[in-house]
Image 1: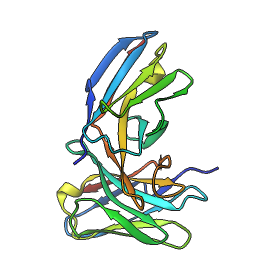
Image 2: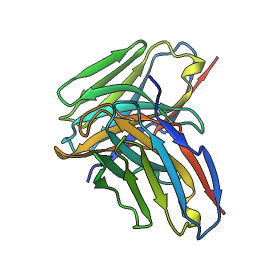
Image 3: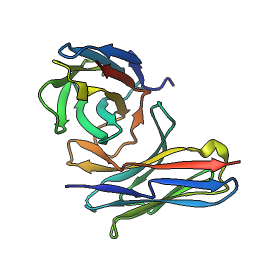
Image 4: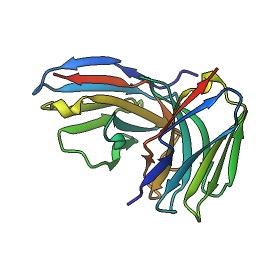
Length: 114
Length: 113
């Protein structure tokens, strides 16, 4: 059974810092890993999708890496800003050739202080 | 291109009632999945629909059901509501079944009193 864990559960940093959010999964048989952002009371915004054959993806100040063999993914945020404050969720894509689902971690709540 | 839309955004129901939530996927997307989000359990998979067929189902009781229409729009229904069904229900759409990026709607906040 796939389990996804995110550490830390909460993080508070001053503006401008570079930071790393961690995600680990127990079953390496994933077809992709997706990072999301969720603002309070809102839906999920997709940030980055890494296919199982890829090692990393970049979008602006965000960089996500994937190491299937060790069951780990990291989300790197460069030069953090107060607007980055949100909960960040990683989700492992699992399933067969006909169907899939996302298994989510509990999230890391990030606060960036001005 | 319009995003995933969900209606209604907020609902208040009484125990024992039933409720129907609606989801319209991104144009061209054929797969729709539903998730329940609660503070205690986090995000949990409910079911996935593709081509009007349920392809996968999470570990939820039979009171939770859904369907998908020929235009890919989907509805989920919860019968005999319980207090524990209070949650944010999120719908996600993707182009196809496996390996595609999932895009989420704003959710429907259901409160059961």
